[in-house]
Image 1 (cartoon, rainbow, N blue to C red):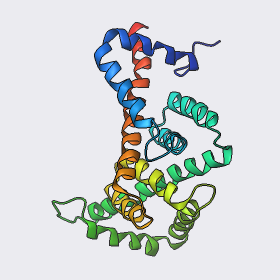
Image 2 (image 1 turned 45 degrees about the horizontal axis):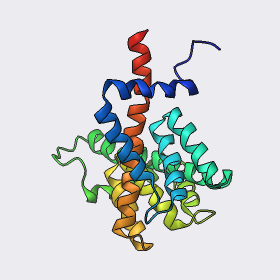
Image 3 (image 1 turned 180 degrees about the vertical axis):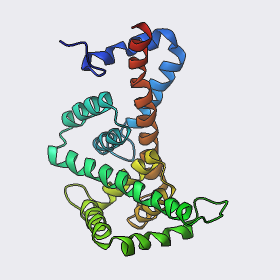
Image 4 (image 1 turned 90 degrees about the vertical axis):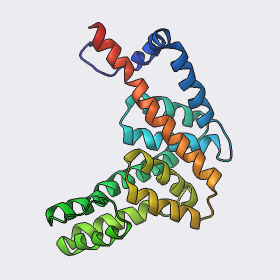
Length: 218
């Protein structure tokens, strides 16, 4: 097997080295991760679908490999997994578009101390004027992704909220939390989805720690 690769499945076994370097911190994270992904108000299957979606935003191949294996054991279909991944895709794209509001403000030399105003979302419509075809194409894509399919609209909005906490888009967090509430999502369900996002974001950083160990010892 070639050594010219940053990512190998076997690399993840080197997490044991991190355990030896900082056992208390490592075990604290593992305990949190297990609790965040354990079945609660949200099912284990939904949390793992959420984890797969988030892993496509963090870009961690170890997380994708591990959580896809888990969700498959939980009898999720490839089609359900794809719907979750497409929600992540729409949120990642939507985050980029939403941050375009800040680009418009900067381009227009708006001297505003507050970079994220709720009222600023009105400027999204300016993109429709700038390029109506592209704007409509994105809106159509986003609408199609968030429609109920094998996953319900409620499940998709919970995934969207979780992903938005990883993209760090304030506009997305605000809009998708409100949509989730309209669909009957409780604060407890919302909190569980956010903890999944937290665990995946942290887990991605930890998993990449094996690459740091490899680089350090190289």
